[in-house]
Amino acid sequence: MSLSHEASSAPRIRLLPPHVIDRIAAGEVIERPAAVVKELLENALDARARSVSISLSGGGIDRIEVIDDGIGMTATELALAVQRHATSKLADESLVRITTLGFRGEALPSIGAVAKLAITSRPAGAESAYMIHLEGGEIFPPRPAAGTFGTKVVVSDLFFATPARRKFLKHPRTEAEHAEAVVRRLALANPEVAFRLEIDGVVCFHAPVQDLASRIAALLGEEAAALLPIEARRGMLAVTGFIGPATLHRATGAAQFLVVNRRPVVDPLLKTALRVAYRDVIPAGRQPVAAILLSLPPEDVDVNVHPAKTELRFRDPNAVRGLLISTIQKELAQGAGRTATAEGFARPSPWRMPLPRPLPFAAAARRSGLAEAQLPLAPALQVSPPQTPTSEKSESLPEPSELPPEQPLGAPLAQLWETYILAIAPDGALVLVDQHAAHERLTHETLRDAWHAGGVPAQPLLLPAVVELTAADADRLLARAEELSQLGLEIEAFGIGAILVRALPAPLSGVEPAPLLRDIAEELAEWGEATALAARLDAVIARMACHGSIRAGRRLSLEEMSALLRTMERSPRAATCSHGRPTYLKFGAADFARMFGRK
Image (cartoon, rainbow, N blue to C red; front, top):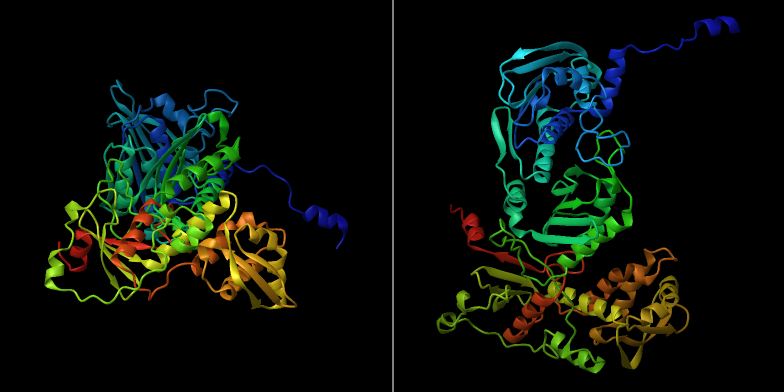
């Protein structure tokens, strides 16, 4: 084949027809029914609607209807609204100070390019409404129609003009779930607007105008009762909302609502900050529950990063990340048993638990100079003799109404299987505490506080202990000997694969050195050589805390149980152990009624 023939048969460059251009462009904005719902709702909110009704059929593939009571549009405005890049939402062309949810002018023409679109609108004071119709990109001029004040948008036969894209849609039920998630996120970001969502004739969400706490309660149901309020400000940057305690978490991030300047987002920076804030208090792989709203000057955030406008670019990302992490961690550092007091979260949530801290043994703490007031347990945990319940003893059980409200974990009643503490709370609920998990967190917090105060006191061993390890583990520990000494662990080399332990952290006095060193060596093995101990402090302290805690099978007296409960209440992060597991469970009247099948 000749070169001239190859050149003549090659495809020639040509301009695409306008309707094809529109359909290609639509793919950036409209990829599924949920995207249509999002764009239409944003238009309604930008039009200052105070009530929005959404109806879906066939997962939104067959039909989407959105009705609002916003400012409406005239016939002339309708004709402009369906033209690409026509918008009323940009005050200038700088794209610096964007105060509306939409601004690109792409949504309506994109929808009209791939579906059948009908818009009926009537501004306040107008004698009648006008309707404009689009079908596969073809525009039919506005004509008079019947309609109330506001705007009604109907999208039907989605992607009929792009069959290839329609084939990639999921089952209608799945598409409806995605659309519902969009509605719920926008509803949370705009509690001053009433929302009603109907799917295939069934109303699945209906929220009147309400405050933020009530809107979150409507969205999350019973889980909202456990949420804790947060609020902080740094200059013009403000954060508010509600977060779940460490004991409330899920397998996915579906219950995370992140809003910036009234815009729901899935921004990576914010999600990372949320994960870091909870990293030390929830189990690995689990996701916290949160509804967080940030506000900052529009010029300090760029929303023009992606057509979907769900990812942002902050002018000062470190300030945003730092404020969010510190605000959440401050709230999580409250004592155990605390519940949200914000309006709308009236009752404590059963099954939910707040947060704990390390309990050193009194004798060891006295030798190291730690304040005895911090200690929850007696010097050398007294082993109480078995006690057989009697009718007389039952009659002397504390009345919940007589218990002080500042002690939400209540009064101890008994120890079960020498592992769990059973207590009665001031509200009459039963509290079940895992004694090892609780004491582990208390030990963790004591070690952590001592570190930040200048170093953990060391308790010299009467006879130094020799611990045999693999050569690699011994080398790892010796390489960090100076850093470990700040945690009260003093070690030195004692031949190949052996370490001489001269002192242990005072709060861990009495633990076996060998298992402790093996666990720390295992932790160090997961790090890179350049990782400083300070950067992974909680991980090492968690390993230590586990060894210094009272174990399951240790019998406690009522005084010791009470001391443990009181220390949990005043200790940060005491609702979960160092591994993120709960330290206590709370069972109220509603929980027992549910378990017994009572209404």
